[in-house]
Amino acid sequence: MGVSPIMRPVVCDQSCSAPRQERKMDYVLTEHARDALKKRHIQIAWMERALTRPEVTETDPVDADLEHRLARIPEFGHRVLRVIVNTRRTPPHIVTVFFDRRRTIP
Image (tube, rainbow, N blue to C red; front, top):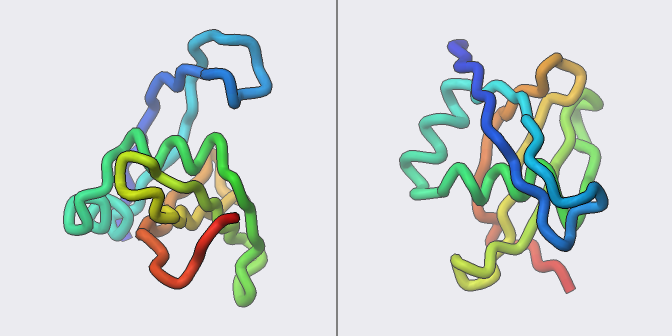
């Protein structure tokens, strides 16, 4: 499986607990995640929002190394974006990303 290292600046906003400043978020996109972003027309900024400021975090029911990070995306009709991350890897590896039709966040 191919991976592509990505390092992007992330700007904190009012919902961020850290003071407003620019910081780096290191992560690796797997080939599958890269393909999913393109095929599903998901913007990197949306994925990074769910990755860095999830509204809900869930453990994977099958693989303890994986974490599901969910966030509503206002620019896409408030649909819930699910980003599945292998948090045991350094930097974290994004396994896949998709809009979860079955999930809502109150």
